[in-house]
Length: 443
Image (cartoon, rainbow, N blue to C red; front, top):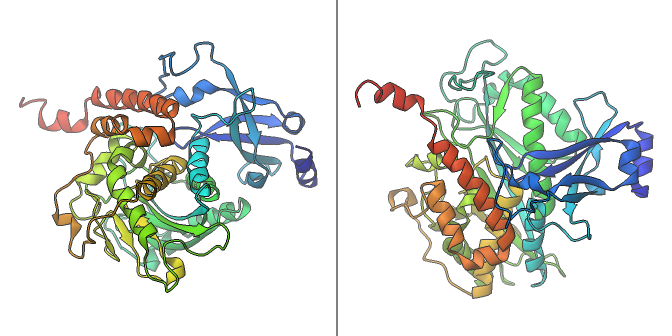
């Protein structure tokens, strides 16, 4: 804490938001004064990881402590930044979660990812990732019972048709984009490409490649910055996987590679730049274990609507070279940039858990020294689906995969299963507008 005091004093910071990513990938935490921040001993109850999206709490006291014990929030100095939309005297900081005895809390998403990364480090490898974040700008929707509608641009017209890759569309959202750029610059979130995507009001922002944990932090912050920048410009932004009927879903494509810790060289190619057995084992692990990891790549009942699009989303575990119809694509790139793009994760994922699940699958393939299927050079969309089509079946797959449970942590998996089953049950109990329209008077 002493090392952070000069930074806080130089900016005349009065308070600090201490942030923890929960299972949804949403920030939990508390705002503390600078004096409290410098004193340390910032606490929250561990039970925050047992709260579901509809406000319920885990009541299985074999998973969460009935006494609702505290955990320590340990601020990470490298994540301390100014918070751009307050009065200029507020900072924010991502925190690791520790037990009161000083160990990393096993159920915290950031811990789960750190543990997976440590397994790679034991092999002398470091995971490198880059995300492609898709999201929709939509008209304000204060009444959640009303359908989501496309936004209006600066010309005042509501967008009614997709205009994929048109730069003129980006001009209509310039106030939002300018504000987002300001916010990301302040918080050191590095992005590269920006495009208008396939949906009406759908944008995609690409991240630079880099360390997996650092990029999970960046994606966590980015989603918050996008939503806040949209609010500040009179819009809503949503990372829902399938926000509007008839529009494409939103993904969070994940590019992954491994480098040798000692040399920094790409571990997926041999000395002459050709793909090697490590790459193929990584792909094989993705093929074998992704079905069990689906609760982290498609984390809500809405997520599975995206997989009903027959020609825009992977529905099986095929792989191929530069083939966007496959789940796992090896892009055409220079040897040092050889990587695997996982096209399955939705935009609604918790970035820590999506990255952890994907890297864990690849790690298991490397450990087991398994081989992938032959690469697909035709359309994988025409092949039979093999991925789970619902949250219930996805959770069953996770619970029956002992290697996945062991690698991610039995305690964490048990609590995650408890939370997601309650969310799925709440969704199944809800009567929808479709049922009222098509069945109410004819059933």
